[in-house]
Length: 110
Ligand SMILES: [Zn+2]
Image (tube, rainbow, N blue to C red; front, side):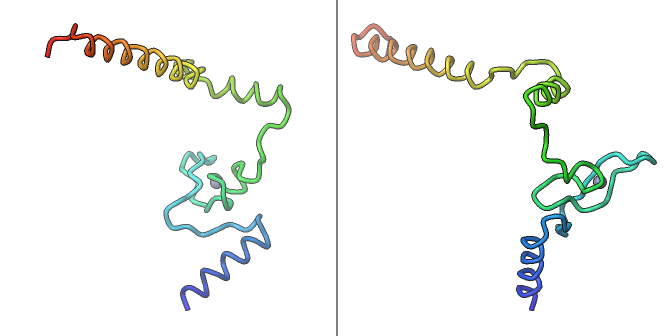
């Protein structure tokens, strides 16, 4: 019976994506006008309820994305993080190769 109820809930969600999915662990949590956290359930697949941006599909234009990105930037410490990490991996592999060559040549202490 419980499985049937869950499958019915899933079906209603698939038919109507605007419908809120009841998940006991997640709440919207946006700051409300009286200062407390919003207790409504988020829109399915989103983190916020329909009143707090859950229906938004995000910025579409390049200017809009740039504006949101600028608003989200805190310190820039992780800007281009992936490129930096790839460069680090390349350097580490080179260091490893040199160390292995030195070990094979008997230049490293045991
Ligand atoms: Zn909310």
